[in-house]
Image (tube, rainbow over all chains, first blue to last red):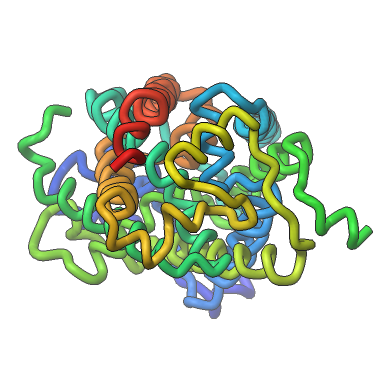
Length: 174
Length: 187
């Protein structure tokens, strides 16, 4: 354990005051037991850079491509999403089959999702917004990078939408 | 080679590479690929306002904020270093439809006549940017994820709830693009 100086191992502590909040979420339940120094996160910055380049080069971040997709005028986006899912599925299957570990030696954990009505209502609402802005959250960050500074307004509106959801959450059907 | 990179990349190159983000993040440190959560972390770190949904240790999810910062930087690098100037090829029927709303020119990833600072002060631009952005943020969190968390990660892990979410993402998109957006663009 020569890396012990770099990170400390501790039990995952649930700091959430609202039970179920994390399990409702797509990613927040992925609790690694390792705690790293901040510079370990630089590798995610690097993956993000590659991902941003990919999305711009494939024009996934183009408003026009999204409009074509929802008018069935182009196969491009369906090809991207379809082949991405196929590759992801094969990768996850291989990870499970060969019990591949992370670079820190932890077993890879993937959480199951439980159904709630949010996937229907929220999904529909998200879709309405996606076709207006021509961007889901990832492309918003990439579009700002490509110099469309006004997309900061769209991003802040999305942050506001997230906040209002958190505020109204208890009153919404799930 | 560099000339080839500077062209737009076809779907069968970009799609599988996007899919590889899922195993890369898992192997790099057990991270589930998902982007809209970054918006929640921004709320939790900046305006938690004592709302239980934002009371968690967002620092543990800081990797997600590094990731989206990377997307921002990568977007700029792709455009300024790795692209030859070109117009985006758009389906003629869409071009014709958009011209009817006064939206012309495809030399940017977003149409300047709709998504720009000038347009923000028009009714339709304001609705598309602030209204659309709000729906994206609200809907993604309500659904528990967006295109990356549900449509890519969730489907890769064969999760039925993610399939349901993806179907409704698409349904919402079809309704907006074909039935509602035409009225907004006419404003």
